[in-house]
Amino acid sequence: MLFGTLAACLSAVPAFASPPSSLSSKRAEAQQVSNEINGLDASLSRADELLNLANLKLSHVQRDIKENRRELRIAKQNLVKSRHMIARRLVTLYTSASGTSTLELILGAKNLDDILNQLDTEKRVSSVDSQVIGQVEVFKASVKEHAQKLAVEQHQVSQLVAMRHTQQRSIEVRLSDRRRLLSSVNGEIAQLVHEQEVAQMISARRAQQSAAEAQSVQQQVDAGAVVGASAQTPEGATVVPPSNYGGVVGVALSYQGVPYVWGGASPGGFDCSGLVMYSYAQVGVSLPHSSYAQYGMGVGVPRDQLEPGDLVFFDGLGHVGLYIGGGLFVHAPHTGTVVQVSSLDSGWYAATYVGARRIL
Image (cartoon, rainbow, N blue to C red; front, side, top):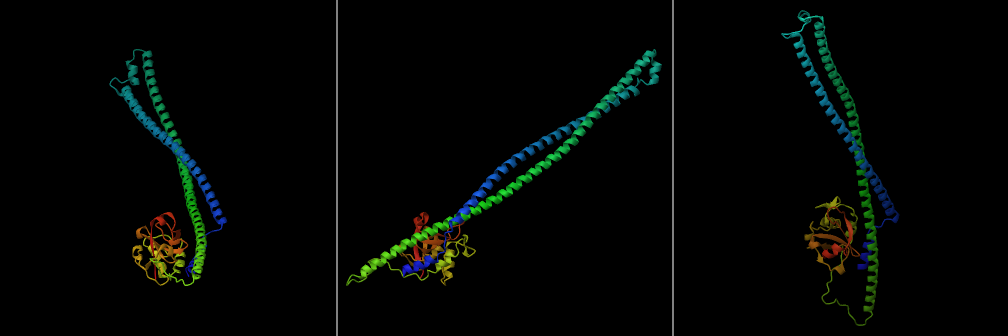
């Protein structure tokens, strides 16, 4: 009866192993995406340096513009000062008490040479004033021309910086997409590897169970051949009623891949006790939504008498799963994982195993 139930349960377990070609193709895809990411990383590094160069050019132009504005301000100040100086000199020349108007020059001159000398001096002063004004005006015009050129250059460099920013952002978006794709492909690879490992464990458990059943049958045959012998239960042995809910395993296994959700008890997401409660509810059995409370249900089961559908407990009753046979159980492990199959003999589960309960 035990072997028949176990065989039926194991035969109901879906085929986990994917064709090797599927896993190989996924690994090849992951390698291709990884190569693309490496290329985009290099492109992003170049884009960063080109942006740095553009910003450096922009800072130089902005510094030149600032310097040019200072020079223009100085030119304007010099022009104002020159005009004020020239105005004062003209006032001194033509309106002072000892003014030197042309008539006064003639009347006050001692001779013709004196008149000509004074007129020549006045013209030279006016000429120097004109040169000063002219030089300031030329400097001012030069500064303005330079400012216009710098404005054009600033506009061009600003456009260059904007273009570099756009290029950088484009690469970052593509890089982000590639990284998400790689994460997804790696997740698929991990799932395929897990499925292969589970398939291998199930296959090994089937072989072990077949050998154990064959040995048990042989022992029963040998025992029946003893004349006058009577079958008795060994002293101290525990006899547990057989499980009537092996079918609950198929329910739980159908939700592999459903994410762990804290407090979850529906196909949208399960926590450990929520998966057990929901699965049993589908076969008409009501269980509490708590691993601690579920341990109080049914009867205790020795590990060597586990059958499909038994509740297995770990970590001081803080975790529960459903035994599926062959040393395997299905459960919702913890946040960040999904409903999956694990082995009772694996490290943490073997180390924290508490016991099992059979629902009657």
